Every structure is written in structure tokens, then in C-alpha cells.
Image 1 (cartoon, rainbow, N blue to C red):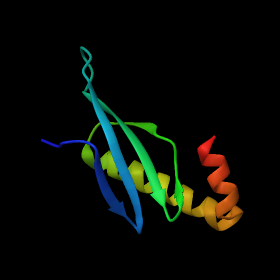
Image 2 (cartoon, helix red, strand yellow):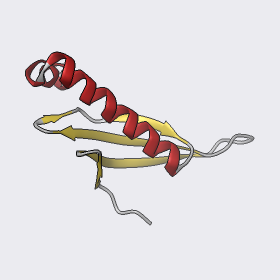
Image 3 (spheres, helix red, strand yellow):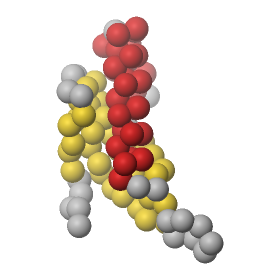
Amino acid sequence: MLVLPVTLEFDGCYAHLLEILKHEYPNMPKQFTAVVSIECGDVRTRPFSLTCRSNDELKAKIEAEIAKLKYSLMLYGEEFVKYMVSK
């Protein structure tokens, strides 16, 4: 059992798991929707949702989002990225 919110570290950034919702539909595998906020340096994103079917898939999706945020920071700089992720 996981008591939320939880903060996990990935590659020098922090992923804040704020909420996890379980969805079960007939004739379909169960799915989860995780509400996540990522913090990398002084930049923190608004909460957003990721849909996944397992812990491994959620971890992979969080790592991909962190990679996109780090890439944006390298390309555009911290001030512009702060402005974009806060809108």
C-alpha cells in the first residue's frame, strides 16, 4: 500500500505522485491514472495525468517526461520553461 503524496527521485529530478486512480472495465485489463508533478531545479510543472497499466510503465513514462523537461531546459533556458510549464 502506498500513502500519497509521495516524492520519487529520477535522474536528479523529483516526481511528485499526488494521486493514483484505478480504473476497471469489463473485458479490459485494469488501468491506472497517476497525477504527477515534476520538479527539476527551480522548475516545477503543473500537475498532469499519466495513464498506465503497471508500475514499470508508470516509471518509464515519468522518466520520459523528465527527459523532455530537461531537453526543454537545455534548448530554451530556465526562465522560458518556467513560464511555459506554469501556464
